[in-house]
Length: 174
Image 1 (cartoon, rainbow, N blue to C red):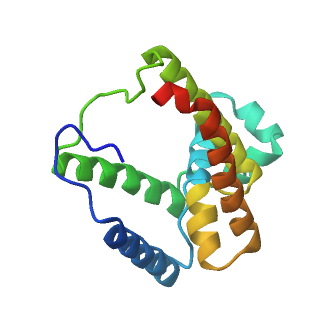
Image 2: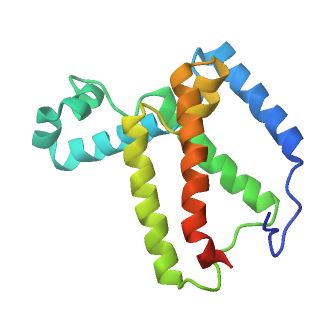
């Protein structure tokens, strides 16, 4: 585990996992939904495309379900939850004195290449989240909590793929 250069220590992982489990339970209990973020991003994209390219949204069967009729794609609990996650993460970083600009990388890779890999990886994960019908948090946390077989298969594939890929890119971090 890479320790931060400055700032308070991280939470105990067992305590953090317990708190995350309690938050997931409360999400189901209070809202009737689990946790997940990819749906919020899809709604933001639909809202932006609806603003600048409304003719494209009306012909796209995926996006039209978010902006069809008089509904506002941003008026959904996922959007507000995701904004809260961003704000909460930023506040947590401020309180832990861990907010600073830095590119973490190994000595064998340039900053530009590290950013290129990060962007390409983000695009791949975003696309895969749509194919898997949910992001990692939605699939692993919410789907895994209700013992959905597809969510467990997804998580085994994520960890297996991660370990398989790590063998090829480990030299960049040494």
